[in-house]
Image (cartoon, rainbow, N blue to C red; front, side, top):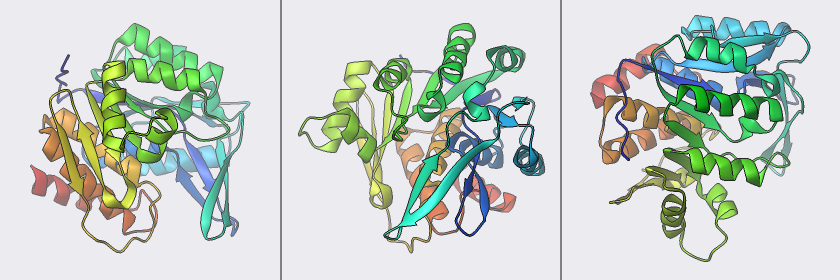
Length: 299
């Protein structure tokens, strides 16, 4: 069934907020849901971010950054026991390796507090990734949100070892109205020798997913529905940093669903914006004028 989204309602973004800690001592605010919410705010969607941070210095830094950007922090829970999420970043053979620390504040998102806000606001869509569900507590909170609020669900598959739980992935696929995943994640999920787009078609059909957005890194992306498959190749660009490109892509997909763009428009514009993120250092360093310029160009 095709879902039409209320353009004036707010997307709910559920999941992890953390800081990437680099060997040189630098700390960067991160987490896929945070990045998606950041871009959605830039595009004027007023997202409701449901996450949990520690009662610590990094939690204060996160709140300050979100407030400065204009993100509504009413859905950000404060945990007096567990620390704000932390990832240790190391470089091996010119490739960043991310070690996500266990039992952080975002593993303990309260269903009571989450429902308190979601039930009182006009909400349009529920975004959630699979990593956000690595803990039993946050997984159950998300399940309760889905049960009691009944929003159409945008699922972001993000397989991160050792936190990959096949049962969680399976359940998420069954709940997805829209699905975004990379070709690497798709290969992990579908073991057949089919070409990637055929695997994506199989996945969409097996789980009754409305739309699958399949990204191929620097080369482009595909969108697959029941009736069509559209491919988009990326233009050659000078890549500076690929961190956050997938989240930028997802945010434009959510924007496009709110604006009722065609799938061709969503794919082209999501690719364009993700490529822009790859040409800079950091996923959340664009200015508000940058978002305004994109909206003028697209709308």
